[in-house]
Image 1 (cartoon, rainbow, N blue to C red):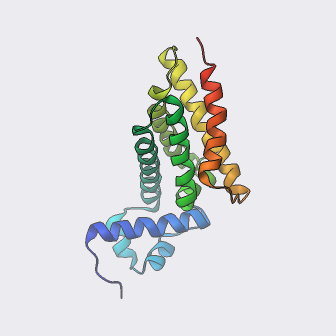
Image 2: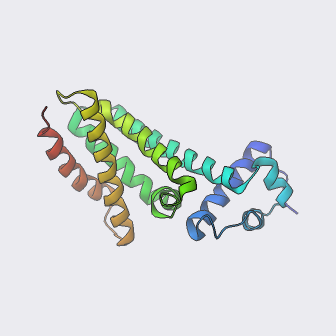
Length: 193
């Protein structure tokens, strides 16, 4: 029998369990029964918190995206200048990937981006992060140019981190981040109208 937890703690437990299963098996290969069994609860308990598997998955995508953005925002908040912001933001990104592998796989490593049901949720996470990055780009350019470059920086981080994970790199997140930051900073310094 499952231990009775307060609703908020049970919801967190269910999200954590679902995250691990979805990251390991993918959305379509994970059932609500699988999640309930792994969490040690009955299906009715799971359905008290989430009306459907799709709603659970979309909530996870949103939550993981929010956590990633919070990590980047906290890291860049006290940076001394633009160069330091680039490196701090990328270090937070790579550290998130290293520490929260399942969350990264859920967002960027699995089929969510290619699945029509969830592609918009993943794109929304990218947009929110790019919207955060855009004002950090200290260049004399118009707003649309700035947003375009912010998306390029987000794509650079995502692609590099996917490669980093796929290669099973033992390189420290700070080293990987510094390498990508060097490239991004060199490019951003050359930006002009």
